[in-house]
Image 1 (cartoon, rainbow, N blue to C red):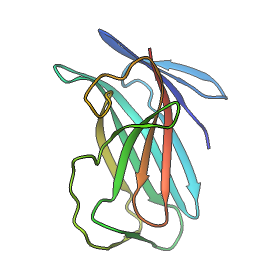
Image 2: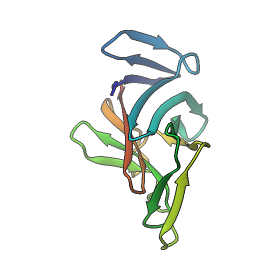
Image 3: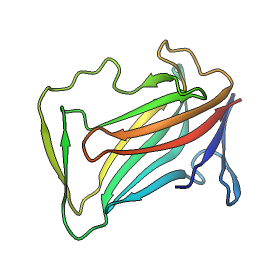
Image 4: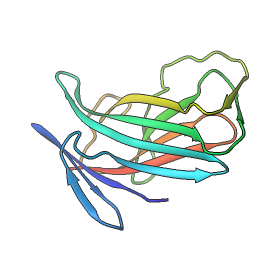
Length: 163
């Protein structure tokens, strides 16, 4: 697994820089996406930071894409304990959960069986750079996690910094 670190600067212009152990890349906005990819048992999951959005009034945010695809020659069954299929969350350096996409949302209480075939599952959300109380994230290091809520378990993460 290749871990990527990001630097987000909220001083009028939103900038991002990506770092990996292999090389350092700096990019602005949409020029160069960064991602974390995991391959396991015929499933390739990718968490990708598509772009930075400086949305007027609601503060800085970024768009994340969580992609699940089947690279095997047979369908892969998943079981979900309810109608929620995925989640995104932000944690601080200590692992404390600061924000969660599913907070305040309701999901049908039913077991859902779904098969991953040739078409990938793509989950795309606008992720605000805020905590649960709506306050902008202070300077520091954070982790964005994306989880497939079914079984077998699938999870990816990207680390980023706010300066």
